[in-house]
Each structure stands twice: as C-alpha cells, then as structure tokens.
Amino acid sequence: MAVSSLSSSFCFQDRRGFYSRNGFLSSHLLFRSSIRFSSVQFRSRIYASSAAVALEQEAPTRSEETSAVDLFACPVCYEPLIRKGPSGFNLPAIYRSGFKCRKCNKAYSSKNIYLDLTVTAGAKEYDEPKPAGTELFRSPLVSFLYERGWRQNFNRSGFPGPDEEFNMAQEYFEPVAGGVLVDVSCGSGLFSRKFAKSGVYSRVVALDFSENMLRQCYDFIKSDNSILSSNLALVRADVSRLPFSSGSIDAVHAGAALHCWPSPSNAVAEINRILRSGGVFVGTTFLRVNSSTPAFLRTLGQTTRNYYYWTQEEIEDLCTSCGLINYSCKVQQSFIMFSAQKP
Image 1 (cartoon, rainbow, N blue to C red):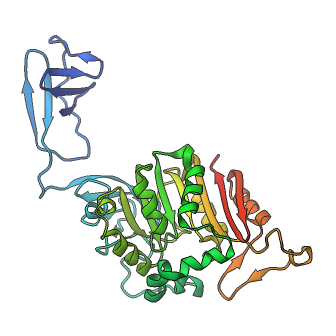
Image 2 (cartoon, rainbow, N blue to C red; image 1 turned 180 degrees about the vertical axis):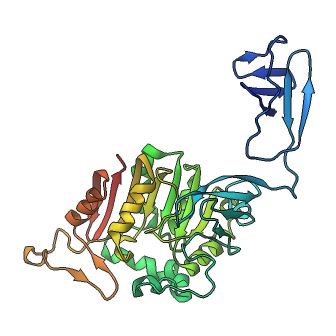
C-alpha cells in the first residue's frame, strides 16, 4: 500500500483504487498544489487518475538514510535527538545510526555494541570517577560473573529468583502493557532480555552505566536471534541523567539496583520525570530489616563499604517525596519488590 501526505488528508492506494481517510475520493475533489512531506526523505512519483491524485512513496534504498526525531533525548539539555540512519528499533539498525542534538549540537554514536548517551560521551581527555560501588560493576570480572554465580547468591536474602521476580514485575506492569519500558541499571540484561522476549512492550531499553555489563549483555543476546532482531536497544547512561524526554516512557524497571545508586533520590526523581502520566516504576532491593529483626535493631543503619540499605517505610517515603503515588510492595525476608505510579 502506498501512503501519500496531501494538503488536507491522507490518500491510500491499493489494487482496488484510491481512498481517503473518510472513504472514496470523489473525482471532483480539488487539492491545493502544495504537498507536505514528512521528515523522512523519499523519492516520490505522482499518479493521476479520474478518481484522485495520489503520491506513491518509494522505500529508501539501502544507501539512503532517513532522518527523524528519536525516542532518545540529549542528556545535556533533554532535547529529543535527531537520528540519521536505517529505520527500525533493534540492535543492528540503531548501531548503524548517528544521533545529534539540534539544540546543543552534541553528537552521539554507538560503540558497536551499545549507544553511549552519557553526558561525557565523546570526551577525549576528561574522565569522571564514580563511587567505588559503581566502579565495581564496571569491572570485566564482575560483569562476567554476575549471572554465573553472583546473582544466584541473592536467594539467601529472600530473592525468589529471576523467573518469579519477572512474573511479579509483569503483574505490576499490566496497566502499561504495549508501552515503552526502560530497564535501568540492567547489569548483564537478565531482565531486559526477558522483557524483550515477552513481546508485551513496544520497545525495551536496556540501560546501564557499566560498559562491561552492556558488553556482557550483548554476548548473551547475540546467541539468540529472536532477541537480536527484537525491539531492544542497549544504552549506556547515568540513572541520575536519563536520556529521555519528560513524560515519554511508560514503564521503568530497576532490579536489585536502589542500594547501588550514589543518590537514590536523584535517580527516582529522574524516573518520575521521564514517566508518562500513569506510568509505572518497579524496583527491587535488599531491606535493612525484615519482620524477624528485633525492634531495638530497627533504628540502626546498615551500611556496607559501598552500599546502603533501607526499611520499607524509608523506600515508600523516598517514592512519595519524589512525586510518585499508589505505592505498594511485596516482602520476603530481606527482599522487597516495590511499585509506584506517576500521577
């Protein structure tokens, strides 16, 4: 089917003839001579018949590029990025594309495996160190071990396991099924791959600050063609500076991540910013105390060298103070899955 963009309505052509959005076009219907084109560049041919005038758009050849506003935004100014390259939201298409902010003129590109949308992307000399807890997960060894023993140890604290955690999260995400999901602090993509394979979401973004975690995620993905060609993107970004426009995302997942963030309040505020009205945030973490913790110990903080753990009440207060509503949670020993919604 060819689709034309005329001055007053769309016109569709198939083997049976010409149609307008409101039915058959009359041969007496007049069109102004100007034709409005979308931002996507096509070679076009004009066809005339006694029924109507239609514009048939030819698909771009492999050597041609399309240019359009993309889902991603500049992490510096939050202006939507202009994408140039092959169309489609999947790993091969995105990583053959270039991205540019038309406001601050900053360009972003892929690193063959992931798209780098950090503020410092492209910096040649400047390097910004992060807290030790963040740097730990940038290690190639930790990235390799994460799904090969590291994550399995979470069961000792009451984590029910990836399959059950995924099913629990899916229940919370039911109101936003079919929307765009961002898996922040995705690590090696354990849950990102599950969300992509579920077919429930129109787009899935696996997002992490660790380059090596994203490389490990790609190693898992490339062995599964059903995921490689799915609507999944790998993005390097900071959870406190998410590269999306305000109100553009339907669902955000953060598995076993809250305790790793340098500033959870900044991160949750950012998540609130990018969520659409009615959007859902689901996260899991370790609790500082659980139902079996003696009362006299509940007021004591539990801080490791690199991480901090909270109570149920503190996590709820964090979400509500950042503007989220409808908080709920499920607890099992030191494991908590919590959910909140954008008003």
